[in-house]
Length: 110
Image (cartoon, rainbow, N blue to C red; front, side, top):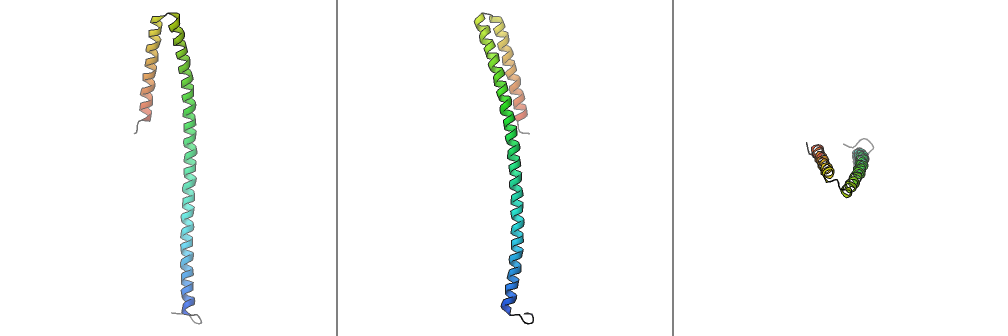
């Protein structure tokens, strides 16, 4: 099996060198695949952070609106208009029911 002028040891070394090169190529392709996966994970994390930031901004806007409504209710309560207070309270309760319905509808698993 040895070629002319080559020893068996030289042939074995060449075979082992070829196997090492093949394994190195396979390892390099797996490393590239892992790099692509990590890049995709980084992009997904960035997108989710953007969504969370948008959600926090809109939640802050809602809280500001809620504080304004509560301030108005407190002013109304101190002014003595109980019927108007009842109407506003019912309106606020209805608003929260709508928000609860919408949030449960859009956050439910499909």
